[in-house]
Amino acid sequence: MAWNRYHLYLAFLMVTTGSINTLTTKWADRIESTDRNGDLRKFDHPFVQALSMFFGEILCLVMFNILYKMKI
Image (cartoon, rainbow, N blue to C red; front, top):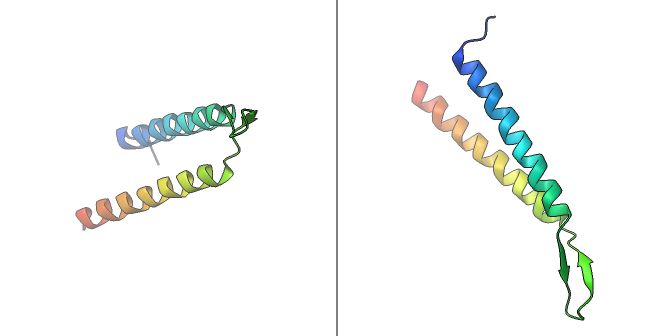
């Protein structure tokens, strides 16, 4: 199967969004904040990261269904 423009666009989009995801996750892991006592602590947020990831996957599923129904 030969690659056409649509396949190249999808591949480029996946690489771009994957890179953005990796860089923002690394940035979020380095955030530090002061707590109520004034101590500097690293921001521990695996729940927030997992929630964002699943929200993004749900958006992909919604978009896929919309495009699928438009094509039928």
